[in-house]
Length: 275
Figure 1 (cartoon, rainbow, N blue to C red):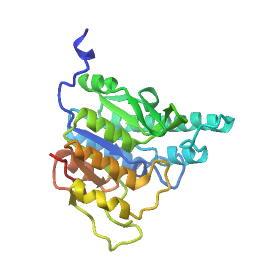
Figure 2: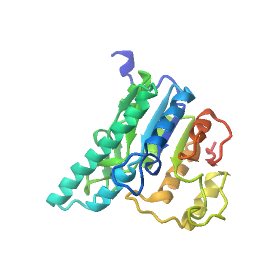
Figure 3: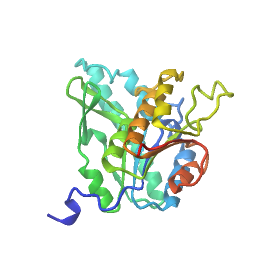
């Protein structure tokens, strides 16, 4: 068997990065990319010069409105409308993924697109199986795997949504990166929404034990199809429990992703890996 086909990762992954859908798309404008933010984030990833990195991106205004419209997180009814919604939503995510790939490619990254529909299955909305070999092979060939939240087959419901946050958690637990970074549209973790409560303080550093009690107190409203900030933090805690430091930074603020990638002090929230 050729060396590059063996299911062995020859160098440790330096980072897994989530490009939040609320950052790379115009949240209130369906199917519109935030080109300024996306191109800058691609530049920051390239400038970091990390050799082993995995990128996950969210759906933003491409995926979430369609998933809600066609009730894709509910049990498959067999209706023509829901079947059409499956295809429409997946194609919308492929369009967004292509824009992400183009932005990264322009900055010199050699990308390998990996749609979840081809490597993951769910059961009642929870992960049932995931095929990791394409990620490991791509990394061993010095390619940058790029995947995204998407609609996938579900053995109980017919199909369901696998979120980018769940992919971050599962890939981190399998690939054991040095760090995991979530880019969102606020500065980090708060106990209330800073967009509506400007006096709330940023939590700059916390342990999993300190974050978990906050989950029941979070008052963020979620308008997406994948659980919002609470689910994101649950997955971040799972990553930290695997011994991996998790950074949550504002992807709309220049330089913050770059600093997190380089291990520099950055405004945001650090959830310390459990060691």
